[in-house]
Structures are given as C-alpha cells and as structure tokens.
Length: 215
Image 1 (cartoon, helix red, strand yellow):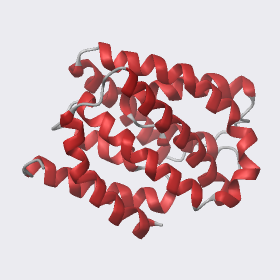
Image 2 (image 1 turned 60 degrees about the vertical axis):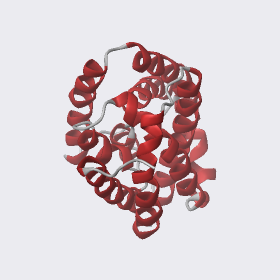
Image 3 (image 1 turned 30 degrees about the vertical axis):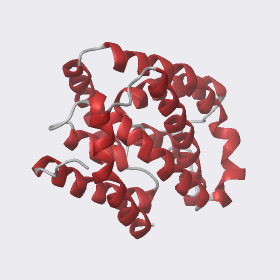
C-alpha cells in the first residue's frame, strides 16, 4: 500500500467531489479530476487509473438509467462506431508523445470545452451518421489521450432536446464503450504501470462514497 502524502490526500478529496457530481448528473468524474490531478501527476500515470474506475462507474450509471436506453441507442450508435479508430489513435499518441506535451494539450483542449459547455451554448444538432461518425472519432482521440469526454458529449446531447433519462442513458452508453475499449488499448500498449495502480487507493473509496450520494 502506498504512502499517503499531501498529493494523494488532495487527489482523494478531488475524486470524492467529482464522483458525487458524476452520480448526480451522469458525467464529470474525469472532467473535474484530471485538470487538478495533472498538477501532481502525468497523463501516463493518471489515465490508466481513471479509465479502470470509469469502466465500473459508467456501467453503474447505465444500470440506473436503463429505461432511457431503448429510446437513445440508435442515436448514439454512429458515435460508438466512430470511437473505435479514435481510441486506437489516441492511445498510440499517449504512449508515444512526451508527457509534458500531453499535459499541455490536455489543458489547451479541455479548459475551453469546459467553459463553453458551462456557458450553455445551444444550437440544434441532429446526431445523424454524418455527424456521429466523425464526432465519435474525435471523441475517441480526446478520451484516450485525456480521459475527458463529458463536456463535448453534454453539448451534443443538450442540443438534441433529450429528456433527462435519455440524456443520462446516452452519456452512459457512450462512456461505457469508450472507457472499456480504452482500457483494452492501454493494456495492449503496456500503459498499466504500478504508479497508476497506487492511485486506485485514493480513487476507490472516493467513488464508493461519492457516486451513491450523488445519485
């Protein structure tokens, strides 16, 4: 068991709050955790631990929103197909590029997306194959490099007039696939390391406490 220093305690507090938000609205765990955790850890250490946690978190969110799945799965299917090549490309980039560049790219891309989503940007978007496939590919690259996909997904679904159950079910379906496939790609690329495993001691209690409270 790793020694809990100040960085680990800060990470545990951050992930507990992020898990609470994820339980309440269906996303937000990585969007809130990653920008703060990158101050102390690199993406190569942080990402594998977050992906493992998100596999279980997203399965749980799907299970509690099953009633919305029949109405939404056809809309998200093109996105799911587009995810596959994007995740493979993003995983290769994470394994190949210098950690400093990955961290810089994460802040450069993610913070504007979070601010844009928080500003309530609205424009009707039909999730057709023409939109879904390229959107899914870009989302796959974004997620496998940064483990964040909630803000662009929320913007897409917010602009389709979905009711709450459909919104949460759609988010959960996409995030189950992206986290599961990303975990497989990370495993094939040898990205699961002992430093990542040590972060699970901070993540697991936070998620077990925060997700049910948020739900």
